[in-house]
Amino acid sequence: MTLQQLRDFVAVVQQGSVRAAARSLQTSQSGLTKSLQNLESSLQVSLLHRTTRGITLTRYADALFVRAQAILRECDQAETAIQQLRGLGMGSVAFGVSTAPSLLLAPTVLADFRKRNPDVMVQLTSGLSHSLLPAVREGRLDFAIVPLPADIETEDLVVTKLFKSEPVVVARKDHPMARARSIRELAESEWLVLGSPESFGAPKGSVVDLFAACGLGSPRIAVTSNSMFDSLTILSETDLLAPLPRMILTAGIMDGKLVAIPLAEQLPRYEICLVHRHSVPLTPLASTLTSMFVSYARLVGPAG
Image (cartoon, rainbow, N blue to C red; front, side, top):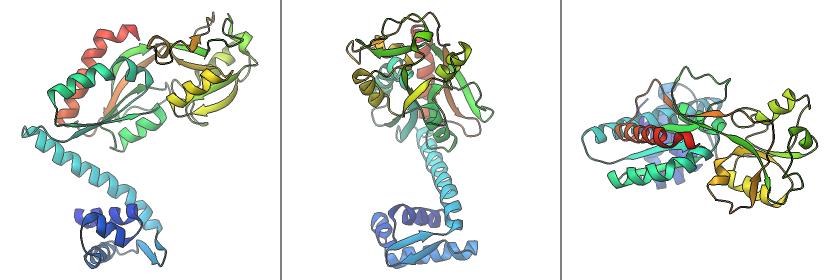
């Protein structure tokens, strides 16, 4: 099994056919077919079923595809690291960021980084902890800046605390409960929560925990969303409530359409952390960028 065979195999799976993969790789169909046959021979299994409609994957191919992608990512990162150590100033950095650090840190740090490294491609992925952390572990992201759920395992990660973010309950400006003083007044309200139905973002289930602590049972979660932009739009046009970072309001991105409900009960602050894999060193450029984020967070973090 060679790296070229793995690249050919991944291309075929991603493109859906040998013909399309050969075109994307700028090689011949016969050469690509031979490469796949050699790969199957070396593994002594059948990977692809070829039909008139394209290809289907065997269970062996399903398993190999995940591993092959990880192997090829590591090879690409190794090549990038060597190029950067040679001082070529080339390559890319891929990282993920959640809402609070995207507002507080990313604009200033990225502007400075780009001035110093104008030829480097920065790939930024916005998201929540439950989607960004797996991407870090799988090597799809060099690092991520996210809240860490209290119950998550981090033995395989390097974790650097940056600042604490303050969540507040947010509603549209003219919401009938906008002046509520206690979470008990919101017992019958409906909620929007960032995350998936299985994982309500991080810290996990803060509204759920608050309701439980006040003996209110479970909140009426009507909508879960993975998009901050979509969530803000929905909140500004409906009577749904949501726990969001306070800096969403102070950043001015909603132009006064949303307000924080002045509740006596407070949602607990949570740490925003920079995380990357423990087992794989960062590339020089990724290391530089993480250092810049850490340094800038020390200057402005208390404002979060």
